[in-house]
Image 1 (cartoon, rainbow, N blue to C red):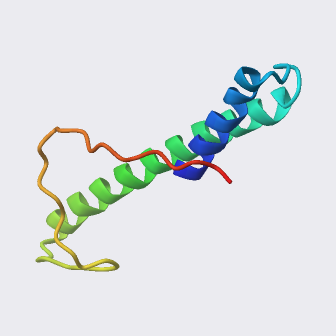
Image 2 (image 1 turned 180 degrees about the horizontal axis):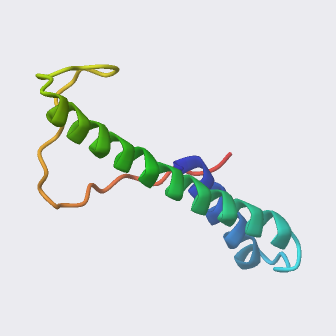
Length: 88
């Protein structure tokens, strides 16, 4: 997602560098659609994770770890600020 956002940012900055917005518009639109699809997919993964957690509880399974075994970060509601990466 970060790379796609960086690409979108680079494409949108072309006009500030004197390049017509007509150049690269199709690529910009496709990158924006890709970002939307990635955002939707990420939400589906989170909802699946939550649904599986509920299934685990319904089945009476104890704690079960799969994949990355690091503890989940606390739910604080605070946003994490990440430094933007520049596209090559």
